[in-house]
Image 1: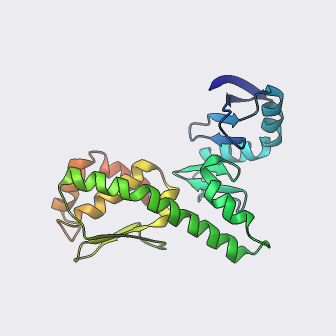
Image 2: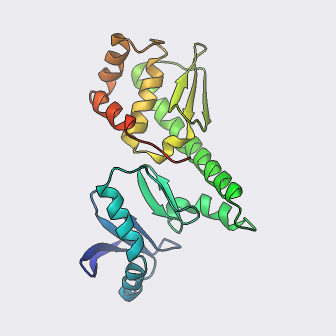
Length: 221
């Protein structure tokens, strides 16, 4: 992939020519880095795309500097691992296909499509991380489940059933790992005792800082 820098007024973006992509998309990182990836080799196309998305980019940059509830424009954006992507991005293919099959702009159906997308992403990403940490911690769980929950990131039952909130896909990977280790630790301590937190910290030394970050996150429905 070839990289170069494009400008739009005072904004700068890294332009990446990626011929394997089917669509062009823009990503705004939390450090305010802007990246444009496109299968179009002509830089003028990328530059026009940059100007077209200027308003959206500035909105994301503003969100990076504020501490507001994380929100997205339904049917236009999607939140994945703490980053907001346009619906045209390669990361949103599954969701985009579901939305394109909708015959009308029905909010309930759109929300259902997003829920299905996060459930799909959960089944694709979370099992590998759970198995990874279970192996490291030398622990065994009986069943791993996924469902959307309003007030809990996860749970662990006395029968060793671990349930993870599909909304986890919206937050950063380091925070997802914290939730996973937290629930696995409940296989040993079914409480939040000092021993419990010590076990979590043994595998995630930064667990206290991660827990504080997680407590500040308020996701939209």
